[in-house]
Image (cartoon, rainbow, N blue to C red; front, side):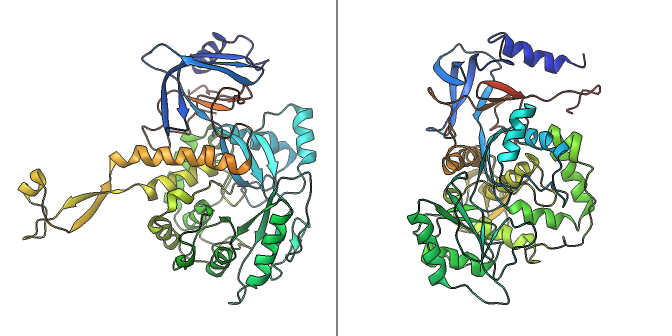
Length: 459
């Protein structure tokens, strides 16, 4: 009985491909596949994978309880060397940390701020660890007012250096010091220098207003970290730029002052992410003290939350980055924190009419509506939820995967690599429905499935 869930999954997969655990061949019948063009799930389809590539997708038979497939997600900013507890990731932890991304459906992650990943990639190959596909940004450049710190992971100042073994993303870390702004001439020149050499300069603003505005004014196409209240976007309203808000970094800081809310959140994350529930949920001591050495100001999270909600073009601009490696943010679980914030903040409120005379809802108004122009927000509008979830999936898949240059492009398509998560129910139906996955397939191989404990819970 205790192995029924695992046995059921194994039989489901092996019925179509007995060698799935050893090869890259797979057949799945009557599944519903995420269609990136329509931002919705397809009808019932049969999918075949040979040598890790999808060779056919054909019309299938209608079945009562189909599986749902989502393309592998992409994460634009993680730090593998930080363990989420304020320390460094040990070798013994690495395989579990890599598995944490797979357990949340991530096929591709980008490391920012780590030393070279070549030793890690060699270790993955030698130890035969399951891992998402890793890419690494260029060594970040810090504005000269920021300290490079120990370890030499950053270039001090805006002296740009390039490494052909890393990808084309060039992070520039900006943070105002003592109310001094930056030289926009220099920022613009460094952006142009990177672009002329074939790189994409991106700005990390550390939730600083001056940094945000200077990055926009000097034409940076990608900006990371929350947007502060009052940021002047007037001159950038017609400019296309991607924004990875990384709200979870500040949200976790706010939870330190509320142990009861922290406890409730930990329980929820554990239900959605089996690796977090079994390995990390009890590894943090929560207190109200600010993290030593934090680079964020002590603004309340609510200010950034309000700005995120009110920015009109927010959904069009979003890029996904979980910030895994910051305090309290672990592989996979960090994505759950971030996406839950997005879903709650972007969902439209219900609206109801007020009785223009009594300034309260009336019986006839509740039946026929009212001509009053006064609208009062109430609970979340359930009709808006599926659309918000579709947009979030699009951001996690083709938007961010295109930014990373992922080989599947954030899609499930003929001729593309077979990177996808398998779900027992439609992920659009409930909050965080994209995360409790039945299994993860990478290059046609089964690389993750939850293992039940004796009590039948995920471990």
